[in-house]
Picture (cartoon, rainbow, N blue to C red):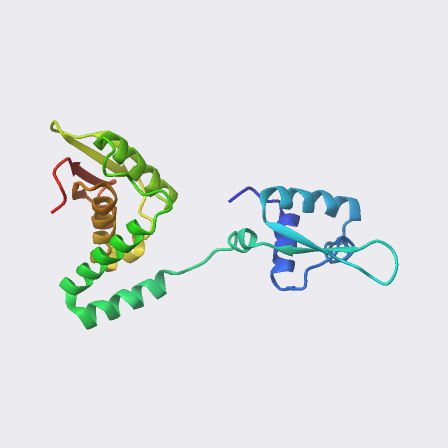
Length: 213
């Protein structure tokens, strides 16, 4: 998220609760600032992609412009999904058992891999496939890097963060999703050597050129 000033945050908060949007004059009155000062904040938020606008024609004069919060602007507000994820995974484990929950994660990873806009080409060299998979993980919120493996024909993808750390600590079967996603996307075998949710310093996925099991 971009660094926002207090007044820029206040604009987003105001528009979050005013779905009809607001004009510059209305925002200036709300913030007790000049119209010119508010305009500078609005222009900045537009540059960030956090606002959109709509022009409406009045009975006289020029169209009135109203500013609205965009989906990207809404996403700047903190969200807590871990409680829902924990509830869903607990119900899956109850309904399917631990083995069934892991199988579900494997199938879900396959569906996600198949839906990728830029799927990894199985005809690409292994190193190129792994670079694409590492980029995919970074797109999903990981801070991942590709490193050489300990043996010929092996590599490792290391992530210094876990995007669902608190959930994975309670439901370790969630880690199967990452393993299966890398396997499905790369066509290679993957072994989770260390895991942050289990006390490791990094999540280290060891990858070999052999076809996935």
